[in-house]
Image 1 (spheres, one colour):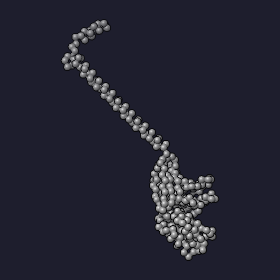
Image 2 (tube, rainbow, N blue to C red):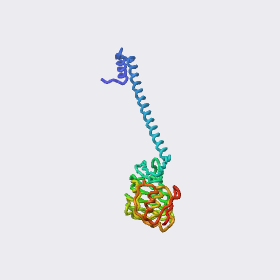
Image 3 (tube, rainbow, N blue to C red):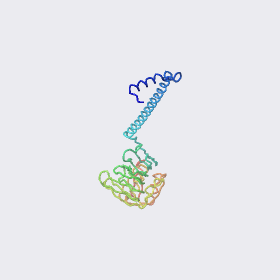
Image 4 (spheres, helix red, strand yellow):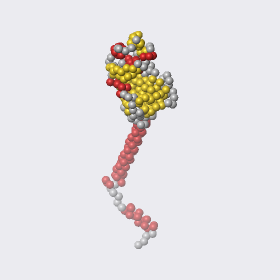
Length: 295
């Protein structure tokens, strides 16, 4: 049997009116508040989760911002600089990159607390033996008065005392580039070679070293003169004891000697031994000056 739309609507209304709604615990009046509380509880949980998530996100963003600002601040601020000086003793310095420097008597090294930028730069006055940690990304640069020594990782010695007429760089391992500051002249050294810069002539030259270990025997507390000229011997003694030793007769400058002394020896004792049986003698002017005379 087919019903018209009007008839079907009347039948549905009659069915709705005749249907019994749940009563008591399951009535609409009783069930609605429970449903409302449940829905509201779910809503509050969702709001709580959103608030917690936002709080975590904000905290993480703040931490990241703090780290970024601190990193930029530390990068922008210059590193604290240190200067280590020696007197009548040797000192070993550990740098932040793992490199080590041993300073000879009456020498100084200036270096930063941390190396920043694309290079690792230090300044030497006097004599120092360097064992440089390898870093292909950051060249290690030693500024020593009129020269610059650039390396990536190697072992070398620099003698650059203020009163010396020459600055000498001796290489033991690896390779170094020695450059003169006042010109484009430079020398790449190989092991057992040295570069000498003459301050007066402003010239840079290279020499082969027959006994390179003699160049750094000072680290063991010795002074070795292996067929050195008297001029060189007095220069080294002057540096080791921080005194001026003057040779009055130029004929003595190229007088050669071979000897070995402990640095525990006094300068006067060394000079006494050197002059024994030879055609020169010394005179002490004061505690800071000695004169070498021809007999």
